[in-house]
Image (tube, rainbow, N blue to C red):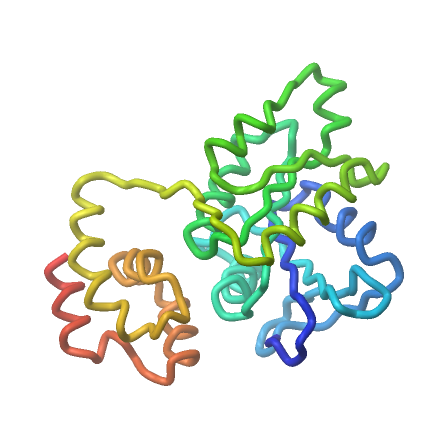
Length: 242
């Protein structure tokens, strides 16, 4: 799946069972279709948020992590890395928000164009759970919107924030910091790797993936760049030193 048109593309990401498909159905109505990711038996739903087709919405498979452990997570990761979405909405479950933050932080490492959708607020309220959306937005450095997709609550505000994030802005997502040893390894690999990525992919995140050597991602990156970065002497040396 690639950017074959000039419409704005919004990706919906999230853990399984957070109401992501309900949100997708609400946003797109009957303007949707499904198909398999090329080379995978994983179904992807697509639709348009506006009747004129100017906003295309891609409902990615449910994923707990972008450190992939399934074909579904691999497809979600590859679209975020190589599919060129203009914005990513990470849908979270307000009743167990902490479990969802890992995916949020991983997505922010790939792109600053992220809106966090805290869904199922109605269920959270029934359980007397209060989410401080303002504080969450301040800590994450990206827009946060509360919704109840089943009733349509908050969807207009969500789409407004998505529209905002697709325009040039001073968005400054929180940087995920690792142990001193990992940060040192990143500092060795990132500056050597960055020129080879030609601005197409986030060098810090890719440096992390080279260090831990995610084989499936390396293959996808090789396909995208037309070269195996680990066959580049300076990159391979930096990874070995890390």
